[in-house]
Image (cartoon, rainbow, N blue to C red):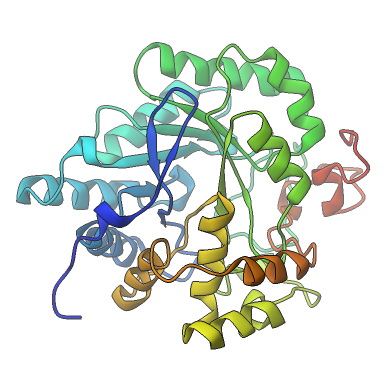
Length: 336
């Protein structure tokens, strides 16, 4: 593809509870320890030229400064205006007591005056260093605390009050945690980011979030085959090898990864696939509006759910925890 074609007018839009429009697909910027900040930021440049308007960032990805330079380049070229974009960022776990400072740093790195959506990246301040291995543990880690979480959320609400974030959001939550904190929120989360892909559909959590007017945003939408080794286990299932995905791919003459994204968009979540290769991120974008899956194909994919969580979060476990399952409240109560 020798030149960029702007597909932005064709991408479906979702509507947040206050009426704000958000694109129905975005570009993730986590390089999965595989791609450096220059490659990721150049992908952001090409993706926006192609029509992406939602860019999902985070301080811990360590590339917001480079993405900011690319955004300035696009603004200077007149390729896009700030109001055309929906930019998100996230506070990392070691900054839960200093959220305004962390948000200001991300905004400065991105070269913006505010972000459209700011996430609590994880629901606890348990910290691990970037690029650590899967066996790493921080002895200061603790179980989820409603009081600590709400202290962090009050700081996020303050970001809205002072205009640094237009909306705020949560990530990596569970139904028991949401049951505990949502009634305490002065400003409700506009979105919840969660792992969502055909082999891990989280139907109960998905329905819970949607029923409360909160927009689901799905990471690992094609199963994140390039995710860090620390997040891989022998029991992991490959989404692109699922029978329903392969069958739909054959019927539409498309790569199975594109079928995963079509399923996500048609289901109503906002997928945020990552790619640094122009043919791939353009194909991902076009998946959101071209050649939809049939009802029969959607039903077959729904029936292929394998409850296979890929990002288990074991590096956040606290002393005395039994295993990564303790992070996800599998018995319906908050694990302490």
